[in-house]
Amino acid sequence: MTTKQAIQTIQKTFDINAIFARRVFFLADKTNLLDDSARIIAEKPKPFVKWVGGKRQLLKQFRKMNLYPPENFDPKNSRYFEPFVGGGAVFFDLLPEEGFLSDLNRELVITYNVIKNDLEKLITSLKKHRTDKKYFLKIRAQNLNKLSDVTVASRFIFLNRTCFNGMYRVNSNGGFNVPFGKYSNPLICDEDNLRKVSKALQNIDIKHQDYKEVFKKAKKGDFIYFDPPYYPVSKTAFFTSYTVESFLDKEQTELRDTFVKLHKRGCFVMLSNSDTPFINNIYSGIKGVKINKVQGGRAINSKGLGRGKITEVLITNY
Image 1 (cartoon, helix red, strand yellow):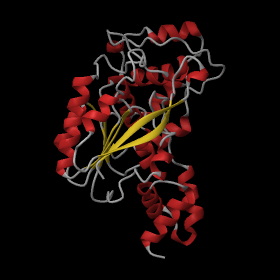
Image 2 (image 1 turned 60 degrees about the vertical axis):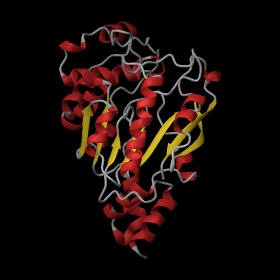
Image 3 (image 1 turned 180 degrees about the vertical axis):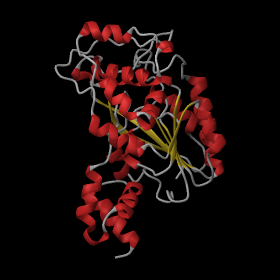
């Protein structure tokens, strides 16, 4: 069996993407390939926060539609960029050995970097949290500018695990304003997964920066995934704001322009967004760019019945 055949066998046997299957192959004991591959896959980290718009449930659909990852992307000689990383579902699915993650959410980026560089202090801090409403409101009211990075990260994870539906929403002043979630026994410190996440982040560059910075680093053959704040499907559809900055017509058009520049450079580019006339219009008619329709799910709604299926677009240039 050739290396390519072995990687394909791992990919099909365990229903994983080709990039991660390649990594598993090179780590596995070749004398007991499938059993050792199963062991490695079982140790794979998962996103450490719940995130509105996260892609974990859609990734299998992307693969079945042959939309992800790009077939000709070479993880050995090229790099992965995710400039709206959020919960990092795509990153944790691919698990590239090297890559660039960024976001405009300062607390989120601090948390990624603390997990990467100062995990033991973070775990110690997370284990000290309580889960009553009074304590929650006290932590929520803290002034971020007076906290250490470890405390910012601990607070971020605590609020994510104990707030209503795991939402992240800020007011016009940038203050977290999601109410208490009333969970019976939330897992605030998932120590085992945090250790796996920390290991996965060791060769990853994580920055607090605008998505446009990716254009300065990306080269031909690199893979870039954009998962921006979605364009609203109606005036009342979106009630969450992840940063103080808005992301509407002007911002979406500027992102389209960056997409096109990367496309012309020879990068592999993938972008998720809502299936609206505006988004379909600004990406239509671009040579080599495809607008694919996928079935998404409403991850956040005040009523469970409201979490139905919606159509999203996955825009690719490959």
